[in-house]
Amino acid sequence: MNFPGINIQGNIVSSEILEKIRSEDIKFQTAADFKLDRKTSVRDEIGIAWAAARAHYTAFRLRIDRLKEGDTGTSETRNSWIIPLLRELGYNVEKASAFIHPTSQKSYAISHLAANLDAFPIHIMGFNDDLDKRREAGGPRLSPHALVQEYLNNTEHVYALVTNGRFLRLLRDATRLVRISYLEFNLEKIMEEELYSDFAIFFRLLHATRMPQKTDEVENSYIEYYHQESLASGSRIREKLSKAVEDSIKELANGFLRHPKNTLLREQITNDSLKPASYYLYQLRLIYRLLSLIREP
Image 1 (cartoon, one colour):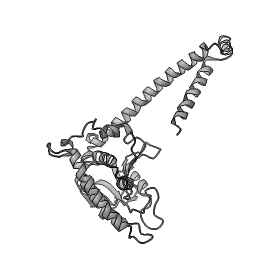
Image 2: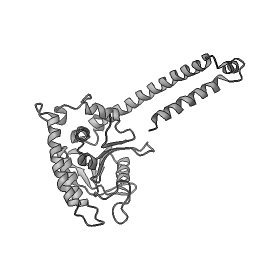
Image 3: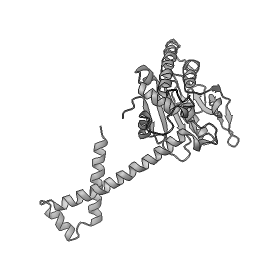
Image 4: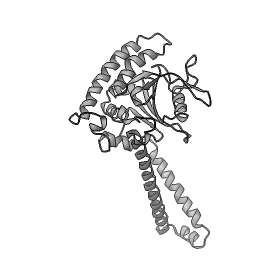
């Protein structure tokens, strides 16, 4: 299934899990799981949040369009867009004080926190800020993404949100990972192109009830369950792929040997001029070349 407003980098949450969330074919998607009255429809709540988000975004864009050149639009992004949006998802967003690491003495100027989620970190920058670049003048010492990632890697928090109003990313503690990892919602695209289906996933996955309710309760959180399920599904996919590659190698190798025009190949195998290991590697390279061609657009 295609998710035009969602970008998956790494393995925080897989596309398979997103699809299960979309089809409501996974745990923790009932009204009770969202701390709603059991008679309340989650779909109705998403519809209400969508209507509110559209109203907030429309007013926000009017303010952004009037910004002077060079203005990052930080206040407008925070007060007119992201804080009201997250409120629709159950977050009680408050300003945060800069955190000074007791050992390294590094400062982490995370802008906000969720007071109802044990100071869950939420870093909100301006609409004209780049999440992957630090401001040329003023601002934190790192890019917004790098700042939040380093903060997670050095504190007790495991998850966080970082956004500039255009994009909103879910980050996870990644001390053991080398490559960048995040789940990103293109809020601008979702709102401008009215991608309600992607907004529904946004609501169902990032609602405040999904996040750790306490910093020491990560393992019990719904978002961690989805993360672990993503890792497990990735392992299952790799196992299936490995078995498929093994079966394909056997089929190709035996097929080449049986073909009536491959007399020379059979002779090379018989007289041992072509070693079994070399023949295997030829098939393996062929399989992976075919796989790469399949993946190319």
